Length: 265
Image (cartoon, rainbow, N blue to C red; front, side):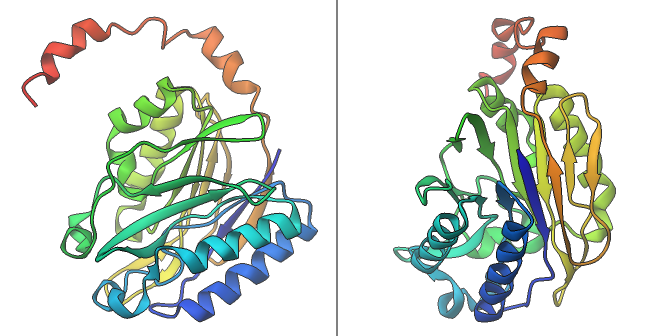
């Protein structure tokens, strides 16, 4: 499968401009033969959290229509990164995923809110897993800070995910953590990790990309530069089963041994 990773410079608090840019780039990668597109985190508004009442996508309706139409038009699977949404009277950081037939197969709200960027002051955390299929591919998706919680990603791998998608706005100041954590999550879960970060800056942070596609052995198949760009990477998902057979980590787990350590939580 040919995966297109789109590493964006996101306009702060400018949804109209961001939708236009995303449409242009998706159309471009479609022309180049992409089968699946992955976008970064909060690409509609960036972290304009104090302006969410005016800017957040109400019930995600604009984003859902936009992604569905592009998926059908270009016959693409789209892992829609995430966008700021308003559901009822609450705000969320939400991932939508569409098949190449325009079917919504995932609607996931970021489970772990990042205090250093004030998410907990403005957003509500999600409370459900994110597992879905894109054709024959069993997949899951988490968002940015979620990768610091290995038990959350392990739960998705145990449930059958062969690939974990990770949209992000991960600041340059901690980019070394980003790269190491992503490789660790791929190796320990023996799956592909496809992670797309943004570049550029907002009033409080600078972002330098380094989006990554990582194979189950931990090999980096692609890493982005420090600029707006996209890349198309051929991924053979059959490698997951091969690696899991060579080192049967999941079969060798001892969950009854671990359980007492978590019972007090």
